[in-house]
Image (cartoon, rainbow, N blue to C red; front, side, top):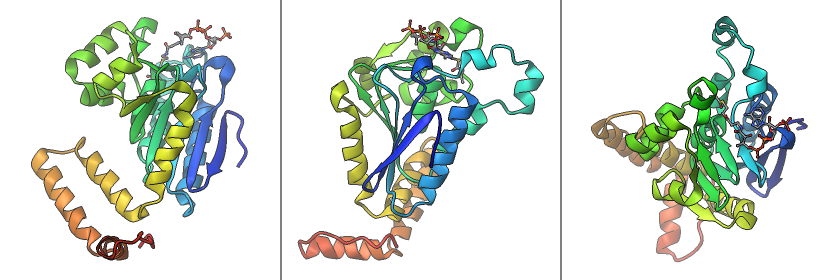
Length: 258
Ligand code: CAA
């Protein structure tokens, strides 16, 4: 795989995708979002990959959609092409576990892209914000919806209506990120966490992910029912038999991904 706006590598069972438009603070132009989707397609199809980390640079995860690219678009341009942000959903739709490792700015579409990952690991330098209103538009890649579900109405409203950025500590306090780590350790820590996930049964991890995601789509009663059905499904896997036998026999489980 060769790309111009992202870098891809594998570290054992983990795929690492690095957004790479340093001069534009990783602004999410059409080419970058297209290439990100292609890389996710390839890694999702690769049975050797158990988890995917998406990161940026020390200065910016991504400073948003590319303002220069979209500035002149007309309504018909963006409506007819279902403008760019529909493509971003590829990350949210990835069936394999995904981690956004965020250092520096994650603004506008950058914050929205990070929120499409399963969870966000933040460097102590991370800054999150939805500044679209300050440039005459509103979040267009799920910001008003995901941010509100993740941090609650008051904080989401304040961020979306003022464009105020929050730092990593505030992001951790309000539940936007799972953890904050020193910037120098961010990628290594994200790969370490991804390696742990990738060492488990892929179908069981996929079911766990699907079930947590259902919490954002449905009522509590329906979500609990859905969870129970998936929980029952794990008993049809060889990996459930292996995992519980290995526990009883005090040995490491050998997963078959079946
Ligand atoms: N689009 C295009 N280019 C961008 C960009 C963006 N979102 N963000 C930064 N850049 C470019 C700058 O234009 C600049 O390029 P030049 O050197 O060619 O002028 C370069 O990246 C470095 O940026 P700055 O000089 O501005 O760096 P700074 O350290 O002074 O400021 C910043 C950093 C606060 C992140 C500032 O760049 C900024 O405010 N960026 C825009 C943030 C923003 O409004 N994002 C929302 C975009 S809209 C959106 O995302 C819609 C959606 O929901 C999908």
